[in-house]
Structure formats: C-alpha cells, structure tokens
Image (cartoon, rainbow, N blue to C red; front, side, top):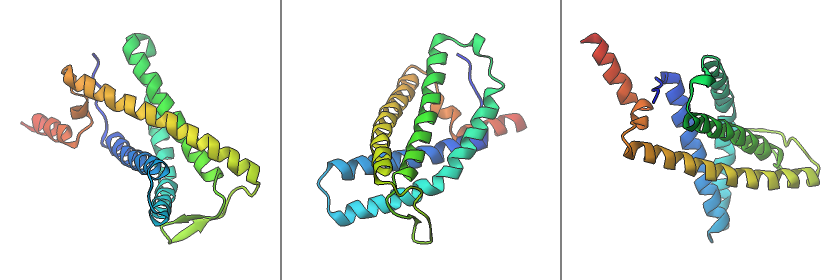
Length: 182
C-alpha cells in the first residue's frame, strides 16, 4: 500500500471540514427527526447556517489544494481499491459542494452569520427555493451515507494495521520531524 504524507495545510483543512460537516449533519438530522423544542430547532438552524456560510471559503480553498495535489497523482499505478477510495473521496467533495450551494439557494430569508452580518437572500422564487430545499435534503442524506462509509473504512483500515489516522494526525508530523533531527 502506498502511503501519502499529508501537509499541515491538508490536515488542517481535513479536520476543520470533518468537524463542520459532522456537526451540521448530526445536529441537522437530529432536530429534523427528534421531537425538540422550536427554540432548539431555531438555535441549531442558526448555528448551522452561520457555520456553513463561514465554511464555504474554507471548502473552496480545500478544493484548490485537492486539485493541485491531483496533478501529481499517476492513476495507472493505483490498485482497484485505491481507485475506489479516490472515487468516493471525489464524490464526497461533489456532495459537499451540492450541499453548500443548495443550502444557500434554498434560503427564504437573508443569510445571517452569527448575528454579525448577513448576506441577502439569493433567490425569491418560492418554487426555486423549495426545489433547492429538496435537493439539499437528498444531498445531505447521500453525504451522511458517504461520510459513514468513510469513517467505516478508516476503522477497517486501522483494524487491519494500516495506520491511516496516524498519517492524518499532528503527532505523526512531530515524530517525523524529531526523526529527521536525531
């Protein structure tokens, strides 16, 4: 198995993305499917809208970094398992983009960001915003399935001795740096 060394930037973007995506998926599905108060629903919606609005430029930067690293990949040398993993990762990127875009376009009011400022509502046609709402729900559902598969694959790799979490941790960077010094 070929081991990749991830840059600090890639690791930071990955873990920030993971935190935002997991928070918004878990809390969003929770308030949608569990009987909670309207205050709780409103609070979660406000936090999720604000958080994901701030996440959009982070995700765009992550796409730039991802694409710049793709240029150095030689697809012909990869096993079918590696090709499948790369396909699923690309699908996750695509679904995150669809979730973010549909989330903005489904808004039926201005988009607040933690009460500090707001963006104007992009669309006013109710049929369009309703359509983007439906797309958003389906894309979130598909993204949740792929994220669960991704986490499952990480667990499976760890159990089989492939230390994928170590490659994505800050501690591995410290150990590598110490090994170079000594």
